[in-house]
Length: 546
Ligand code: ADP
Image (cartoon, rainbow, N blue to C red; front, side, top):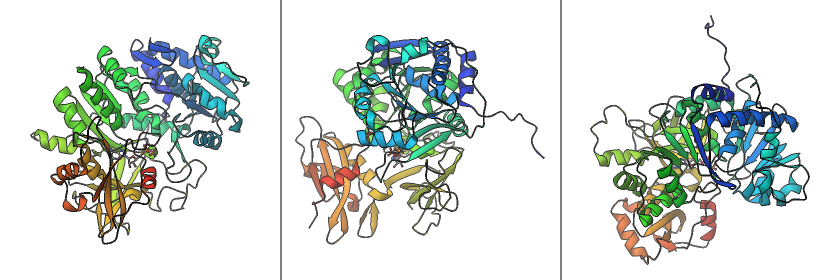
C-alpha cells in the first residue's frame, strides 16, 4: 500500500517561491568588483532571477545544459544559482583560482554551453577562450559601463541581458533527481572529477544543514558565507539561509581580507559566518593588529581542513564567538558531520567543550558512517581505533560525471556494499564524535604505527611564533618514515627548531614529535586553500633522516 501524500518534487525553485512570499524585504548585501556596497532585497533578487531565467532561454540554453560560473560570493552569483537550476539546467561552479589548464579541462569535460564570468576573472577566460570546445556565449557579470574591451564574439554584458527580459517566469516542475549543480574535485590525484548534485540531494542537504544541531541558520540571523560559492555550493548556505529567510552578506572578491570581513561583520551586524581555518586565521590576525571587534558574531562554522585549537580558543576567549567545526567533502555536498553538544554534556567545563570543538563533529541524520580496517572490517567507536572512513547518504555521490556508476568498479567511488570511501583516516569516539587524523595518502607510518599529521600540525601552530605548519613523512633507515615539520614563522620571529620541538613535547606522544624542522617563507596551497601536501613533498623529496 502506498502512502496517500502528494507526490511533490523537491525543487530548488521552491525555496525561492517560498522565500519570495514570506521574506520579501530581507536584505542581501554584496561586495562586487564594480560596487563595494551593493544592497537589495529578496524580492529584487527573485525578480531579477526570473529575468535571468528568460535571458538563459534567449541565449538558447536548454533543459539539462551545463552553464558554467566563474564568480565570487555576490548577488549575481546567487541569481545564477537559482535561475540556472530552477530552469532545469545545471549550475556548474568553477573555481577561478585553478590553474588555467584545469579550468579549460573542466569547462570542456562538462561541455559548458555558456560561461558567466566575474569582471576580475575575465582576463583569464579571454586568454583561454580558444581552448573551449563547446562554449557558445560568454557573459561578463557587470554593467555596460564596466564592460571590458574584447575582440571575442558572443561576449555579453550581464546587466544588459537582464534589462531586456520580463520578470515573469513560471518555474517548471520536473523529476527531483534531475541534475541541478556540478562541482569538480580539486584533482590532487589525477584529473578533476565532476560531482553532480540533484534537486533532491540539494534540498535534503539544505534541510539537514538547517537542523538545530547542525549549522541552524535562523530567520533572525545575518549570515556571512566566506566559504566560496564556486566550491561545493558554499556548503549549501545559499539554499539553507534563503529557506529560513536570513539576511545574507557576501564579501565578493575580498574573501581572504580580514579588514573587509571585520568591516562587514560589524557594519551589517553579522551573527553567523562560515569559512575555512586559513580565513579565520587572517581575520584573527587583523583583529589583533587593529584592536577591532566583531561584537555580534556568535557562531563561526569551519571545515575543509582541521581547525587548530588556537583558533577555537581565541574566538571563544577574546571575541565570545563559538567555533562549530564540521567535516565534509565535495562528494558529500559537503555536510557530513558537525559539532554540537549532546544531552549529558551540559556540565562539561570549557576544556572538555573545546576538546570536542577541535574534533570534526558528530553525525547528522541522513549520513551513515563507519570506519574500517585494511580488510574492510568495521572498527569499534571507541576513540582509539582508527581506519578508513566510509559514508552513505542521500547527498553523497554514487558516481562522477562520465565515469562508472557500478559500485565496486575502479572508476566508481562507491564500494560493492554501497559505501563511499572518503579517502580520510579517522576514529570515532563512544559518543559518535569524529576525529580525522589524516588523508589516506598523507598518513605517516613510523615503525609500524600510524601517526597523525593533523595532530602534529595543530600542536605546532599552537606555538605563538608559528604562523603555519605542515607535516610530511620522510625516509628514516630505522623507522621507515618519520615526521618532518615544515614551518612558516610568524612575522619578525626568529624562533628556533629546538624551541618549537620542546613546546610540542608537552602535548604530543613521543612517537609523534617530529625528527626535524625546516623553515620556509610560505607553504603551497591548493586552489581551495588547503595545504598542498603533494607540492610540499616535492619540495623536500631529497630530504631524509639518514
Ligand atoms: P578537494 O576535493 O577540493 O580537496 P574537498 O572540500 O572535497 O576539497 O575536501 C575534502 C577533504 O577535506 C576531506 O576528505 C578531508 O580530508 C578534508 N576535511 C574537510 N573538513 C575537514 C575537517 N574539519 N578537518 C580535517 N579535514 C577536513
